[in-house]
Amino acid sequence: MPKASIPNRPAPDIGSRSLLAGLGILFSPVAASALIHIGSSDHLLPSTVPGTDHLGRRVGELQIRGAPGFLGTPIGPRHFVTAAHIVFAVGDPFFFQGHTFTVTGRTLLPNSDLALATVDADFPEYSELYERDDEVRRPVVVLGKGRWKGDPVVVEGVLKGWRYAETGVAGIRWGTNLITGSITSTNTAPGELAGAFLTADFDRAGGDDEVHFTVGDSGSPLFLSDCGVWKLAGVASAVDGPFRPTDAPQVTPFLAALFDVGGLTLVPEKEPPTAYPVLPEPQPTGWYAARISSKVDQLRALAGLPNPAVASKVADVFAPLSAQGTAAVSLSVAGVACVDDRSQAGAAVTWDGMTARYSASVPGPNIDAFRYVVANDDARSGWASVYVVDLSSVGTTPILRFCPDGTPVLLWPLGSQSAVAGLEVGPTPAGPWDRTATVPQVLEGVALYPDPVGREQSGRFYRLVLSE
Image 1 (tube, one colour):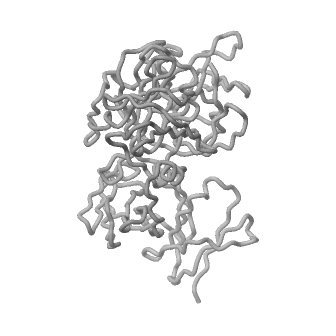
Image 2 (cartoon, rainbow, N blue to C red):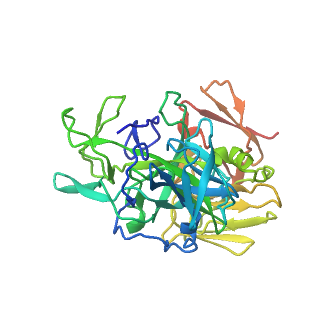
C-alpha cells in the first residue's frame, strides 16, 4: 500500500511518529463502512451526541471507478471539500441527499491535503467552515466510511488494539475524539502529504465512542461545535503505521488502530523501524486530519463565500483558584458569545452572560484553562483563554508551570513592586533581549505570562521589566 509521510509531531506519550499510512490511496470496491471504535461498532448514523443528529445530512459520497466510496462535505452552493490525495476527476458523480451531482472542477489547495470540487447544480444545504485556530483540546464528531474492526492485536496476552478488516457493512458511521495537537508538514516530494494537520490519539480516554480512522476514510469530515453550531474543522488524511509484531524484516507489516503500541515496531517506509518497549502506561497511536482553519480564506474565496473581517485580538484573562477549587471570572467584553462548559482538565464551567464560574470536583491543577469566544458584529469571531491559577504555592522566585494543553505559564512574584512594563526573552542569560508583544498580567502580587511557544524552543530566558 502506498504510504504518505509527515514529520514527527510532539507526542510525549509515544515518542516520535515518523510515518503515516494514507487513508484513501487505495480504493476498495466494497461498500465498507466504518471507523474503528474503542467499544461497540454499532455507531450507524444518526449520532447520539446532543445537537449532532443532523450531521449525516451534511456529507455526500464520491463515486469512483463505478462504486460509491470516499466522503465529501458541501461548504458552498456548488462546492464540496475532501482530501486532495483522493484521485477523483471531472465527470465523477457525487451523491448528496438523494440527488446525483456531477463534478465539473477540481482545485487542489497548495501546501495542503484539501481539495475543493465544483458541481453542476446547487446543493440543498451545506456546512459552515470552522475558522479559528483554537481546535486543540476540543472534542470533535467524525463521520467515516472506511474499513471494519478486524482481528485483535495482542502482545504477551494483552490486547493492544485491532487490525483493519478487509471489508465492512454498508453505511456511514460516526464517532468522537479529542483534538490533541496540530502539526505543519513542509514535505515537497511527490506523493507526500504537506500542510497543516490536526492530530488525535486513540487512547481510550473518550469511552466507547472514541474512534480511529481506517483505510477508505480519507476525506471524511470532522465537525466541531462553535457556540452550538457544528462546523467543518477538518478532513481525514492519514494514520500512524504500519506495524510489525517484531523488528524482523521478513514479517509483513500490518495497519491497525492501536491504543498501545508497546511491544510492537513502527515500520516507516523511508526511515529505520522504531521498536517500542512495553511500558506501564499505554502508548497510543493516532490519526491526522487536514486543518480547515489554515485554509479558510482560500476556501471561502474559491467557493464564493463572504470573507468576514479579522476580529481584533481578544485578551487572555487570569483568575485565582480558591482552596475549594473554584473561581469566578467576570467577562464584561461586549459581544461574548459563549464559554466552554469544561476546562482543559475537565472542571465544570458555567456562564450566565456576565460571569464564568469554574468548579473542579476536586481541587484543580496548579493551572487550568478554558476558552471563551467573542463575536464582533460582522467580523470573524475571536477567542482567548481564561487561566485559573493556584497562587498558594508561589514562593519568592519565578517559576514555570504548564497548562493541560502544554502552554507554559511564567509566574513571577513581584514583592513590593506591582507595575510591570513588559517581559523580555533572550537565548542566553546575557541576552540579546527581545520585548514580547504581551504585557504580563498582575494577580495578587504575581505577574503571569502564558508563553505558547516556550515549550517548543530551548534555551529561553526571561527578564521582567518594571515600570519606573
